[in-house]
Image 1 (cartoon, rainbow, N blue to C red):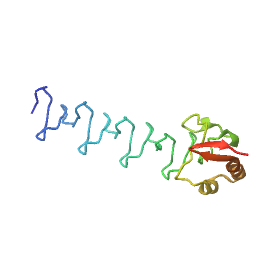
Image 2: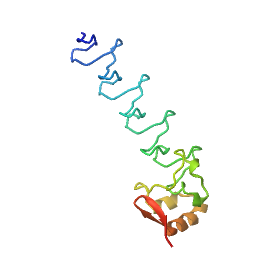
Image 3: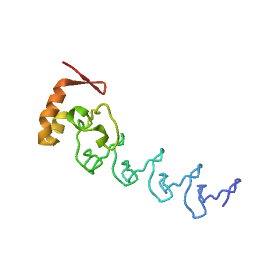
Image 4: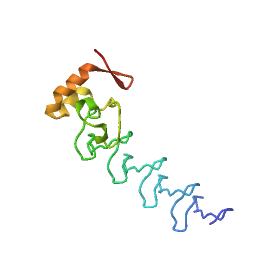
Length: 151
């Protein structure tokens, strides 16, 4: 069945291509649940970002990312490009770690994450960094997502 624009439609009026694949009005491939797919059948969100079947963001290598684009492992632990475990403080230069080590590039301030309260971060953190993290916490206060030095 074809409509006035010579577009193929199924019995429900859903647009299909020559292979019978469902398409939306923009010609974007959709699965039977209406989820956007690319030409390889990979799930994409409305911004074209790759998602897995659970809706978790993935990069082109299939690596899990959070909504800020930070690399995470399957347990949700932050990882750098080398796969080394990082906590929420690892982006700060005062710890001797370059923000560029993280896969999201330069971050002037570590983002305070509700998923990892600071006590938990410290226990996850490598032993030799614990003192630095504590010292860092004493000298910085979190104000509206930005950490500012306090005396």
